[in-house]
Amino acid sequence: MAHWDPPAKTPRDKGLNESRAVSLQPFRFNFTVGTAAQLRAQMGAPAFALRAKKTRRAVELFWAGLEERYEALWVAALGDRIADDGREVRQALLDDKGRDPIGELDHARRLFREGQVPESHGIAAFDRAWLRHLDHCGLEDVKHRVENYNRFFPVEANLPTDPRDGQFLWMGRAWEPMTVPNREQILERFPLRG
Image (cartoon, rainbow, N blue to C red; front, top):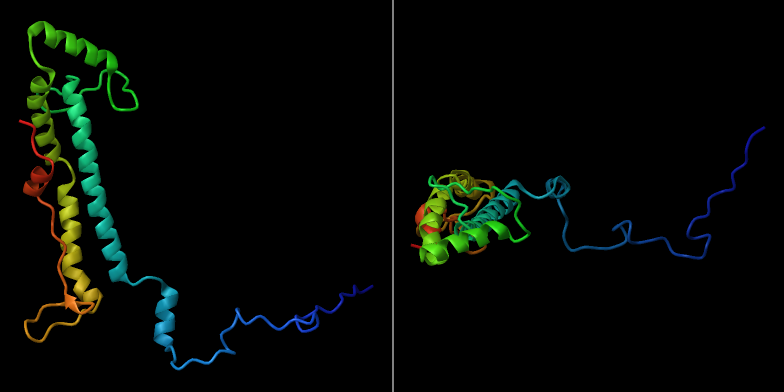
C-alpha cells in the first residue's frame, strides 16, 4: 500500500510573498560581478591579507610575551630565584602572582641580617636573567616572519608603484614595510635595571 504525502505548501499558498533574501534575482544593479571576482569571494581572504594579519599578530604576541617575562623576572629577582647563570629557579610552588611567599620572606630576613637593600640585590640578578632571556626569546622567528612579509606583501597584494620614485603604493599612500624588532629596540623598551 502506497503512502500518500500531502502537497507541500508554498509561501504563495499561505498568502505570503516569496522570500527575496535568498536570491538577489529580483534586484537590479548598475554593475555586474565577474566570475573571477565571485570565485575569489568564495575562496576567502586573499593571501596578502592573511599574511599581514598573521605577521602583525605574531609581532604583538612577541612584545606582549616580552613584557610579561620582564615583570616575571623582576619578581623572581626580588625573591632571590635567579641562578648565577641567569636561569630562573623555582624550588617551590608559586602563588597566582608568580611569587614564593615563604622563600621571599626568608630572603628578606637574610638580606636584613646582612644589611642589604632587597632592590639593589635583585638588580644584578635581574640583569643577568634578562640578558639571558633575550638570547632565547624567539627574536629570530619574528625577524624571519617580518622579513617574509616585507618581501612578499607587495607582490601578493599586487601593489602599484609610484611612477615618480618607484615606491609601492598602498591605498593611495606610500607603503611602509614593517619594522623588524631588534635587540636594541627591546632594551630601549624594556631596559636593564642596573
